Image (cartoon, rainbow, N blue to C red; front, top):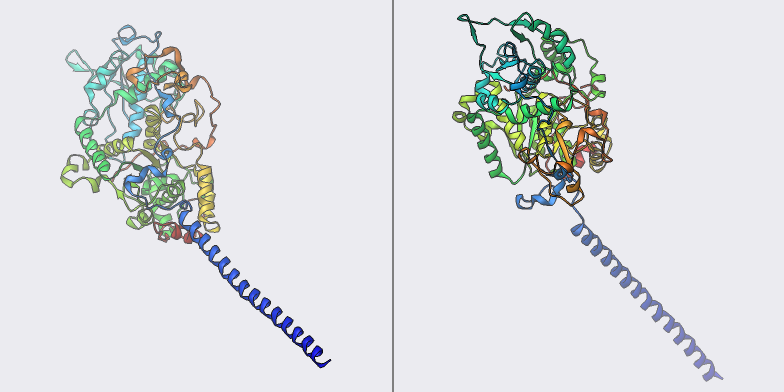
Length: 564
């Protein structure tokens, strides 16, 4: 009996011991499984971090890998289907048939280089409307720019006369009459004067006077003209107006030196001079000092009324600051290793104002950094010649960016559309205003996404602006043709003016229709046409013009900025 009880006791003890061993093993197994699971999770996280795509502003690819940021930055996907077309139609009368040899038209341009360029272009068309011989235009020597250069010191005058010989007769100076130079009758025409306006106001004077000079000739011709007159405008602006050889050669050197530094580069036309800010009526957070300084400059324009800075900013009529331009470009995906050529006069606030832009894009160049003082000596004392050098580099750049909607920005935008829709970034200032104002309340990814959304339709692609909208010099829709068969992949696309005659049956003029891809963008109509290039904001901003945050060139530091 005792042996039986002892056996039962041993059996119970052995059972408990086995259960204990099993539980002990399970306990160890649990720890092993736990440790193994943690290792797997850590490996997964490390793998994800290593192979995840770079953030929006990861900008450390080498120049050789520049293409990795995406070809859309450097070209427009649809641009190959559009090209400049400015040949006259069969019904366009030539100069030898149309010109009245007793009528001479003179014009006095106004403003800086690009404002004068609009006047020269429109003067040729005005002479055609009036059946008159055009005397080579006189450039503005007395305005704020005080540039004594004459036409032949900026443009190739012989090329100008010969290229347009079939359209308008042009001479270098008024002829002598009875041993004396004919004295022209001086008058002005209103802005946006239509062909009928010229016929009613100027033609009657020609019945009494053989020579008429039209003063302050800027934007004195209607934006909307018939197709042949618009195409004449394009022939003048994009083909007849060629810079002198000395300017072209120096401009070419600057472009070549940029190309030696990088495969692609951005050209930024930065209008942030004191006169531009004063003219705009904007406030940039510089306190009483800024208000006094810009207010004194603003008095130069007697016709300007007092503006509400906040309202001006809401309307998108304030130039972006250098920092804002840099943030916009980084948000669009341009890395810190991108080289930027900056065309600018003396920036208000000096070098301190440029610090944030240079922090975002350290590869910062200008004509002064690319060329020696000796090389620039023939141009440096003449604002229009210096502006011409910047014009050439901006025109030849892979991407052109502007912080404003002034004359140079418009001229280049139109020219780049005509010659292949080269990417041209114009800030959608009306939408970006609120975004910049609230940028500290969002992450960098959120900000960048919103910038990209707002900039749709503002990147220089085909059909971004409805034909007829905006200034013709910015949107020369009458001179942009589409090859419909090439677009369908059935016909090679002619790209240049020299080959316009090919494929006539396949061409559609963009101005004659609105395609399915058209974006109607009212925000393009921001007018600063009275301001021009000088060589030489609405809502309160918490940081102010002189307290810009130093931004690093990497994504994490951009994120920190937006978290402040």
